[in-house]
Image (cartoon, helix red, strand yellow):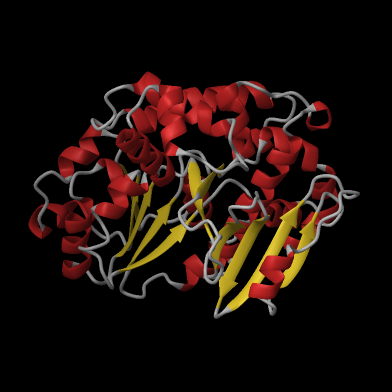
Amino acid sequence: MIYRSIEKDLIQHLFKGKAIVIMGARQVGKTTLLKKLFADGNDILWLNGDQSATRALFENISLTSIRPIIGNSRILIIDEAQRIRDIGIKLKIIIDGMPELQVIATGSSSFDLANKINEPLTGRKWEYHLFPLSFNELANTTNVLEEIHSLPQRLVFGSYPEVINNVNDEQKTLVELTDSYLYKDILEFDSIHKPDKLVNLLQALAYQIGSEVSYTELSQLTGIDVKTVDKYITILEQAYIVFRLRSFSRNLRNELKNSRKIYFYDNGIRNAVIRDFSPAEVRGDVGALFENYIISERIKHKHYTNDYSISRFWRTSTQQEIDYIEEKDGKINAFEIKWNPNRKAKLPLSFKNAYPLASFNIINRNNFYEYLI
């Protein structure tokens, strides 16, 4: 079984008087991880927020009503806790009233779980994010060289656990994963009144990875007003499908200050959305796929190593640009991402003059692994 990067830290925070909250899209391995860590023992109570009986149990919960159910359990695990109404307040009741009990909650939709959990559980939780399998997790399971050789496969099919475990059946797995879980989880919320429009928006975003995104253009393409475009993208982001990368700006007058790019957390999901699984070697969008892969892997790496740097991209009105920037404690690291190792790249002179202490790195398919481990 693949070792997940949060395992050690999660174990170290057990029984420290706080809830443990694990967030991430469906099927990234949250339940599998918990079953691995807590497979044995009669002192563990599992509940699932997808089940109506669990939601009914929490509807009018009190310490008096929950104590007999918890019984002698030392650990309470609630899967898909975002499905339970006012889950944050209800977890607070349990944590405050039963401090000896370790509560662990998972959620596949941060908008429900986060919005209903953060304020009630302020100072009462450790929060983790789990993503599709990272390069580092896969390389630690096999070896770095094997994962390097698997790069073309990852660019097309991504790294969801079920995809990794179903070699030669990746297309079917991804289509089922997308249709059964991706849309289901997002579209069930009553704020989504036009599901076909959201699907169209997701497809439009899939065709624009690596490019600046205009909400006005997306509105025209999908027939959704600009405010709804923004709302739907926020939902997609909070459901761990996509993430926004905003522009970096500090000194130059012609730096773009309010631009954004949108990437997918997983290449396989992106390709499933547009139903394009052609090999990386023959694709016209392989550069964009490589950029999406590298930036999403850097996001995973930062989360798993507790790196709190800010991720950005840089561009000016004169079309000078840098693909990816990380800034922390005043230090700026700039990255150009090139699929072709023979493509030349250099730091734009205006950026170099404005930020003379910034480092500059070129990531290509020959050295990409150095930035992911």
